[in-house]
Image (cartoon, rainbow, N blue to C red):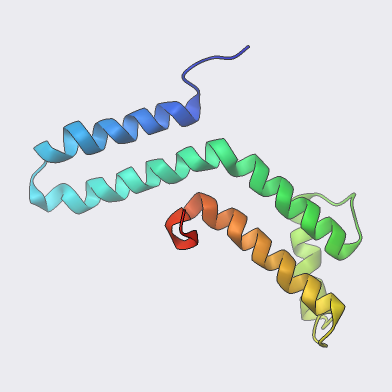
Length: 121
């Protein structure tokens, strides 16, 4: 069943209402706080829309990096931290290159949610 508007769309409508109708009516002393709320609503909307995809990208990259497709995302994150602490990626080479590429892709997926302007989106 496809219910419209979905959560992401509702957040976008709420944000637009805040910015176009409420913000102009607020005193200057509340303008910054209202803009922070609008930004938080935008992040929440992108998280609703794209969060599962970002998690899937991270899970896939960590599974390949750690050679463990069975671990949950939380466990894979912990395993990666442990591998880094143990020096598994300290030496230059293919493992370190794979780590940097994976972390870069994960960061880009997360930034597309939290701050897409940082990616030029």
